Image (cartoon, rainbow, N blue to C red; front, top):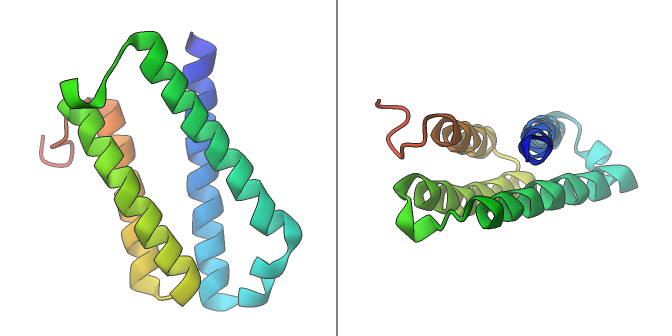
Length: 120
């Protein structure tokens, strides 16, 4: 299921770039966030990311509580969602940066398959 992995990676890249752009706009040009496509496209991309991730878990028979790296990704995902929502509502630069850093941590865990990816 190589296509599924590539789809997941593509959605992850689009999600990261989209959030970074929306974070920038929140800080510099908040009126751009009111455009319909800006409010719709991220939900489509993130849904594709979530569903492809769930599909890979099911196909590879990976269960988060059996693999520490998956547990770390899920916890980091919840933190990313929280920080991302804060950043887009309150618009503080540290919140945008923190959310992007957590996203990069998630990617590093996925690549190394260890929860200590930044320390390995």
